[in-house]
Length: 350
Image 1 (tube, rainbow, N blue to C red):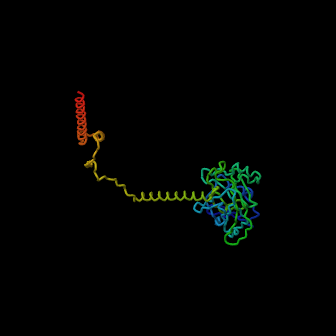
Image 2 (cartoon, rainbow, N blue to C red; image 1 turned 135 degrees about the vertical axis):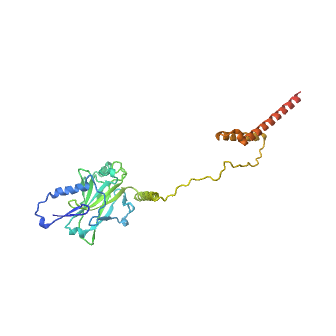
Image 3 (cartoon, rainbow, N blue to C red; image 1 turned 180 degrees about the horizontal axis):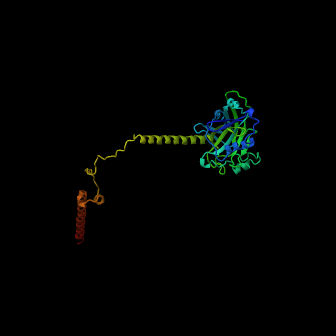
């Protein structure tokens, strides 16, 4: 058996007819179990790896029917309603695979949580949706991701408890440099399900594998299962757009600080010194002596309080003494007037 090793340490074993009689170091069953545990174990690689065969997927937006699903190119994320078909076209360089003697391949789909703090947790359906499909195939009832291919294999890693679905690739007849293979998927729980996804974002990791689980390529896509795909897509794209603008603004400011291009703030100076400027009140006719006296007392109280707050001598405030004299004058006039009226009334009485 010849071994071909790539730069990212993904290994592909090619059958060598001259070495078939040699005894292998371990059985095919143990090898398959080892490779399978690598793809569905506790530690999952989420980095895209097109590999030597340029593994990739396509979503034909022209197939969107009644807005049951939407795809955001900017976010690389699918927004889809529950229990709706999502057609995915996978492609890879078939001729290069065939040259290595690989005759059969498979596509594994593994849902995982996008946030690193939750990635070790397995994803499975909520109890409510499980009960709704209690008469379906027991092998897939706990799987959140279903494949419409009739011979799809539903697997669960008994150590990590992760669920994945495997689509066996049939009819490998090359018609061009790239081989396209269509697979239909359904998501059987909503992102809002409280005992399943709990509104946490998820990825689906697609891996192109040999039948014994060796990885030929890997791609991931974000998924949100919701009732209004278009609304949620536009909302999250707008949030991401604002985030990018904010990051650019911070980077620009950091660059300006580093290059010392931010001008220092010049403190404002008050050239208009109005504190000692003298203003004259306009002529203000007041009807009635009582209103006139009240106005004088109001102004007197204001200027007196101002002098106390500024810790200035009362005598140094010219308006205070002037207002005080006017008030005394008005009160004196009132006293004289009241005295005259009293004498007049006394004379009339006598």
